[in-house]
Image (cartoon, rainbow, N blue to C red):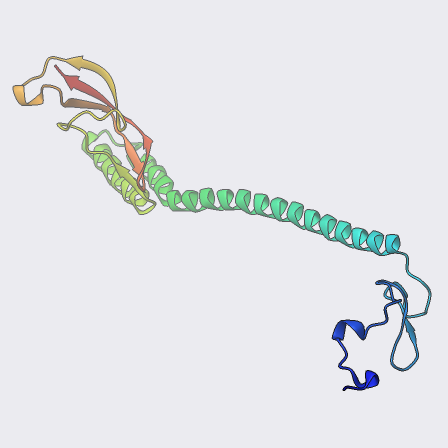
Length: 193
């Protein structure tokens, strides 16, 4: 028979049955430890820990909100500066055309030759068109094509000069333009009936 003193022990029975969770316990070296005690040995109430955590979270939130406000302000300013810079770039590109108009006006002021005036205007118009095309402006090709309400604005209808122009665009009153792929001005057209 087995000796009562040498009976196998159950792991659950080795803990102190009088110990309650959260109470102070003796450590192996004889020190008393308490999870609610500070390093100085003073008890730290549960409320002050949650208050400190709350204050820390509140501080993080306020800092984050301030950073976001600064971000919004900075991006708004950068966007305004970008628009100003974009206009400045276009204006600098158009200055040579403006100079050409001034030179043409001075050169044709004393002349009575209409061909010289017409020629100078054509040169300037060609230069202006080339500059605007470099900036992404493209003219619509509308005359003789089908009417598209998304691209064209019908001003009036006239009898078609030929049968193949019935329901098509007979004349363009005001040219339409694209800037890249976007329509920035619809073409004003005359339709044939």
